[in-house]
Amino acid sequence: MFLTCSSIPFACKIFKKNKNQKSTVEVPYSTTELPPKYKEKVDGDKSFLHPEIIEKSITQSAIDSFSKHYNSNPKNELAQTVIKQAKMETVLLNNDALIRNEREFEIKIKLEGNVTNQKQSGRCWIFASTNTIRLGVMKRFHLKEFELSQNFIFFYDKLEKANSFLQKAIDLADKNETSNAVQELFSDPMQDGGTWNTVASLVEKYGICPKSAFPETYHSENSTEMDWLLTNKIREYGVTLRRLIHAGEKSPEEILQVKAKMMNAMYRIIVTCLGEPPKSFDWKFRCTKGHFHSFENLTPKSFYEEHIKKDVIDKVNLTHDPRHKFFKKKEEDGTIYGTKEYNVNVPIEVLKEAVIVQLKNNDPATFACDVHKFYGKNTMDMDLFNYEAAFDLTPTAMSRLDRVTYKESYANHEMVFTGVHLDSDQKPLRWRVENSWGAVLETTGRHAGGNGAGGFEVMNDAWFNEYVFDVVIDKKYLSEGNLLKVANAIQQA
Image (tube, rainbow, N blue to C red):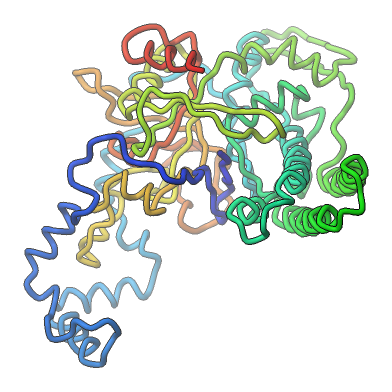
């Protein structure tokens, strides 16, 4: 499962297809029936369907009928006049939704690091993960600001994706090029996406370093050109490997030698764009108490083992997917070839329970969501835009199960929960969210807007129900009730 996330102009995907998957949970209506809101619209509006224009193709009489129906309502002329002139999310913004989503939270972690910025790249998963991992270092060394090298993880992610692609191209050489497996392999092999599990596996293998030891480059912050070049070459190499194997003139060992030469070329591209990660480095800083600290001749692995590992290990990815059975462990291929990553599927209320427990213990929680729905002005709220007033339709008519099943919604961005506000019954009302789009957004457009957020967002709890897909939880909090069920699921074979 990859999160192909990126910054504001880019699309993000975390969602992975699950073939032949049957629903295992109850939904408020049959998936073969119209959703309640849509059924009400069809049954209630007698002019919605016109028997005289029901044809398999569009006829002129149908168009005439649509036009008559549209122009019979004066509201449509007003809506057209306004919406033709500006972005929908500007003219349909519901300011009441902004007002009610206050920026104060009953529960908030004590330490939040400096706001980070992934720029024009799909690395939200790296930033969200490192934004949580770094807090352990900041607490132990009394640091006001600190960042781990996002570029370091990005480098090895690209390298591992290249190796995994080429090896799978060899493994699938006996499959027809039109097969689903081969088509999926070649579809987007060098995209920027990943998850918390990807970060954890990469830093376990390669280590990590402070950002000061391996800083950003133009192409880490603006990855489109590099991604195109890497994708172009890796597809070429994949086709070459398949044809060499089909020709039958090289032994398996010789094929691997060809692959090694290809990996050498991929390494050259990645290093040229991102730089070469340090083999050793010094880490020196002055803490908020005025003490000077110096660590010399560290390696990425030693830095990880001594300062980072305790903040990475013993985490579990909890997901909410209504197509799967709950409290079941699911494994899938990891970014590193030959490895497995897993998550545990749970009800949405268990996701919330786990996050609240973690926040109460002063620990943030990385999560994945569909940020392209009902988001603006640093606010996530189902009522943020009044589409119904302008178009007489309800974008939320589909159930979450249907949206996921029919590709209307998928996880496409990772951020961090750092706070929550509860009602008198200890139920969540709204959530504090740390993003990685900078303290001041650098572009105008759908995500631009301030509200004095300074890089932090607010999420209404109803939005959580519909568009949060998974969260990362420390296993030490899985000790009782539903969370104990999660711990038991992790032990499944």
